[in-house]
Image 1 (cartoon, rainbow, N blue to C red):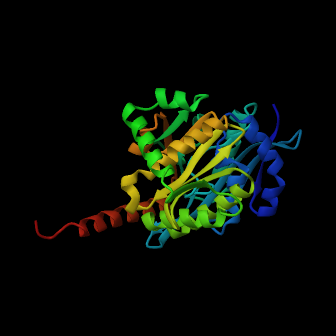
Image 2 (tube, rainbow, N blue to C red; image 1 turned 180 degrees about the horizontal axis):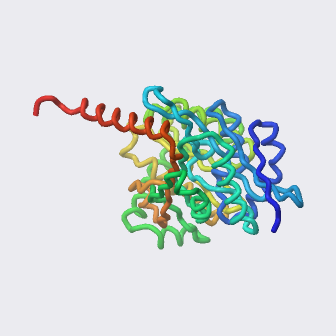
Image 3 (cartoon, one colour; image 1 turned 90 degrees about the horizontal axis):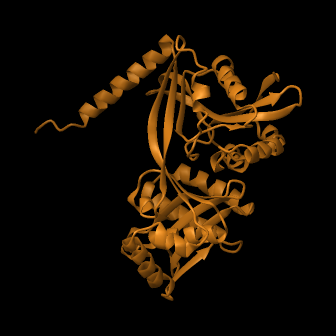
Length: 361
């Protein structure tokens, strides 16, 4: 049996050094996805954020990496009282899927090495992975001793993915309902044939304006400024590497709707990352136009899958995707400090909930 060694990478210079090894593993791993690509992680790690590390499993005989796992850590507690250290998947909250990057030839032993290292060499009390599509999750979980840890697994949000046909007309006739087909035709004609509207994909001359439009629309809807700045930073990196498809509908100088997708030539995935719209134009259905044109573009570029990521939103389901279950795992280290913090947090949440109830019925 090959001897495996776990390395710890915690600075950008070291992360840049492992780029070639990372990308080779990405090509060989059938479970890889954009959220564990080197470029996505570089965007997450080079943006000022939480503390991060990457665990790399190396074959001692060849000095080549056979697995990687990116992690982010932060403190967790109730009002800062008895904070405990929590570990989550690298790049959270902007990374969607969690998982491993691993050579199929080493996955069992390499993932067990990662789990053992996390147990013995990292300081933490809570460990969370959300939205996992990786079927190797069980290898990781079963390495944790039940005498020392509480290990919980639960179903999570459903991922929606279209397996694309070779022809857009086949998609229209076979994947979606007559009602949606009619809506696409009518909405697209109304917007694309109206000289006051412009639909364009971002290019070198428009990228700043188009990113501004996406950020403005998204922030006006969700008010998460830091997350939006993070997305903007990562999407700019993908654009500079020719891996971003950002489409925006404009009415004059007013942004109507925007959709940012990353493309993955290795796995032939076209990934819907973030979208938003101006509510004043919602009756025109700009979202259905952007997504239908985006799916059309993916088919024309010969991509195999269109990934809406997680969430059973009606607008996603209307485009005929298949459903894939994801899982969440949480692991709690059994010690007094952890149980005190979790108990305080639980009681505080219960008190705050009661305070919101009206006094008079």
